[in-house]
Amino acid sequence: MSRSVPTAASAQVRAALDQHADEIAAILARYAATDPRLFGSVARGEAKNDSDVDILVQLTPGAGNPLLRVSGIAEEMSRLLGTKVDVVAPELLRDVVSAAAAAESVAV
Image 1 (cartoon, helix red, strand yellow):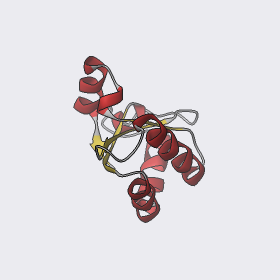
Image 2 (tube, rainbow, N blue to C red; image 1 turned 180 degrees about the horizontal axis):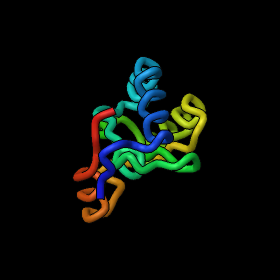
Image 3 (cartoon, one colour; image 1 turned 60 degrees about the vertical axis):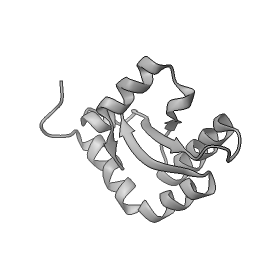
Image 4 (tube, rainbow, N blue to C red; image 1 turned 90 degrees about the horizontal axis):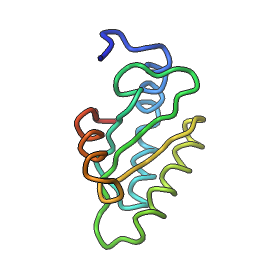
């Protein structure tokens, strides 16, 4: 069930993403990733202070090992935002999980 008013933690993460949009774009470009989308508790507006940030990205095919790329994005974004960031790409997820993440995702 979606909350009509996001939690303070969700709002803080969204504000940090907006504040660091240029740096995030540069990180994604380094790893040949596009279309970052939030999913999980932050996207639903239900994040708590200890919640991680879940991001779904599209990876440009043929630009290197997908697992290493999402790991690099996650590490750099975690440092930038000061909180744990998990990054996934559809090709690394089972179809059911990928569909669920895509269904609830919102643009960063």
